[in-house]
Length: 306
Ligand code: NI
Image 1 (cartoon, rainbow, N blue to C red):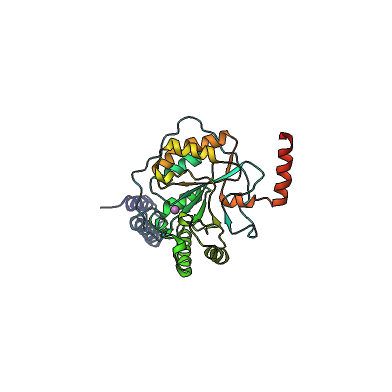
Image 2 (image 1 turned 45 degrees about the vertical axis):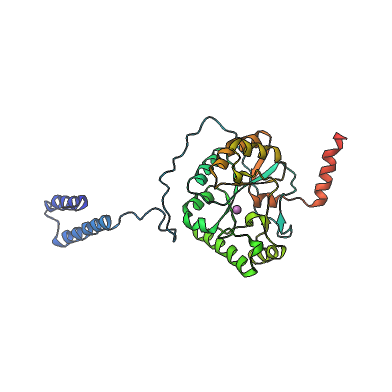
């Protein structure tokens, strides 16, 4: 059967053929051109989505549907905050001394093919940028989710490749866990993680020093833990986050669990209404005040109350 383009080509030639001035050479030229067009259109079926950029195979998440936005939600204000934190500031953080009402929301153990995209929609609606401590093994399974996370302005941190308790491992195994996760993140999204979080928060001081020296990643723990992995229900998760958060908090949650994601609208809207502003972990670290400035500011702020 003639393809539409071949048909078009022969129509052109038929039309032009009526023109006495058309030479045989020009006709051959047209035939060659139409053959090229036909083969281009026939030989180029669209590649499967993402195959050009991703060396890793992934299954499309056909079950996921974007939920409808229900009414207006509070919006985190835009902030042009630097992510370039000083490497002299320390090797381990569980919170950061900052002068504004800034907090960092962190999500561990993803990416998850359904829960992470659902969370990304919630964050996007509120203009909130968060930090995702991903497991390298899952990054290899769902690289598209990580790509979207990065494309929407979130930060990716290293949460090891297989989520083992690092304090039980030798130095070489720790190095492997960190480098394999880093490589998976780079393969999937083309970015290097700036910080790392040890699974279960368990990491020896010597291991933290090695990772900081060799990978440049400080160890990020947390100051607010809603224990969402125990699945106490979305209401409990959000109220624990609201009651525990203060300026400079690093909030721990897990986008692996659907209940945690269910808790996020109330938690995030509640924090925004209380005047908290969300930044990524690197941005929070970059805001760190030196202790002298912090002491001066604290005494200034505290003076009227006494
Ligand atoms: Ni974890």
